[in-house]
Image (spheres, rainbow, N blue to C red):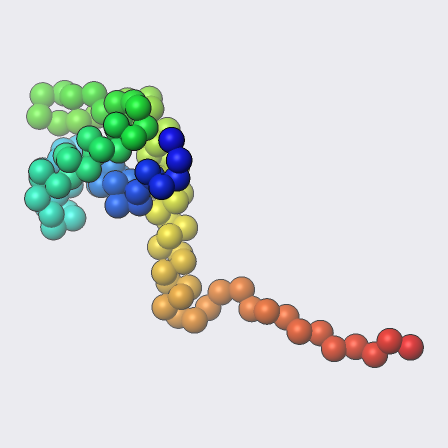
Length: 103
C-alpha cells in the first residue's frame, strides 16, 4: 500500500463509526448518507487488506486491526486539525533571524 491510498476522510469515518458504534450514527454525526460511510469504510478495508470491524448485530466493534488503525487515525486527524488551526490563526513556527558581528 502506498500513501496515495490512505485517505483522511476515510479515517475520519472510521473514527466516527468507532465513537458511535454504528454506520447510521456516524452518518448522522457527519451529515452524510450511511451508504457513503459504509462505502468508504469498505474501500479503506480493501486498501489495507484487512477487516477493521466485527459485526455485532446492527452495531460494529473494532477488531484488533481496527483499534490499531484508529490509534494512528486519531493522531493523524488531530495533527491535521492542529495544522488547520495554525494556518487559520497565522500561528506556527516562526523563522528566526540572527544578526551578529564576527571579530
